[in-house]
Length: 252
Image: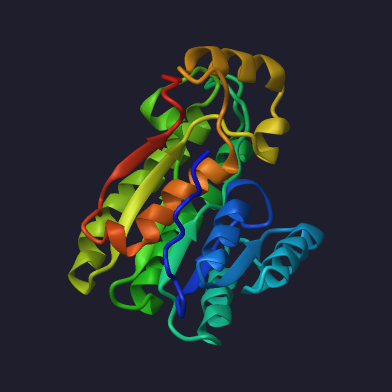
């Protein structure tokens, strides 16, 4: 495999939500490797978050772990305050999210409320914070889901929350564009993350998705992080308001 190109993000300040594991961790480590100072947001697992910071610092990078529920306005403000110790943030990756399998018939109001609180309200609060705090010519990437592009049974609440994320992101691209800030959306397909590992019938899901991909496998967090890193780089300065599906060609 060819060596991956790493952009120069020296002097940049990044906030990555949901960065203690999975795609968020891969993004945080990739940005730190590129020279950015990274706020590693996590919701509850302090040990995992500290492990990410230790890995970044062990490789010569700079990071700090900040606990916070992205559905809380006060916690989101605290993320921006944490970044401010290094200066105005240049990069925001809205990755924190939760999901569960539920049909329209059996899905509960509690499931709906929590998924929309974290996935949708959290995105709104973070984008609102970006409008106030992000440096000019900054970069925003929101993480959605391929279930928006390829609807599947049992995902209505989750896909609905992510569809709202995409709509808000596209509006943010218009509103923040005059300041040179790009806003783009990444739709990961089924990826080898703790969230997927916890799903019921995980092995059957992986088998079906892998069979549907030309590559006959599911994706890795690092492969999604590579696309996000490109969208953050100078090479993507003319890319905004776009949705990129990172799913290995699987149409589900």
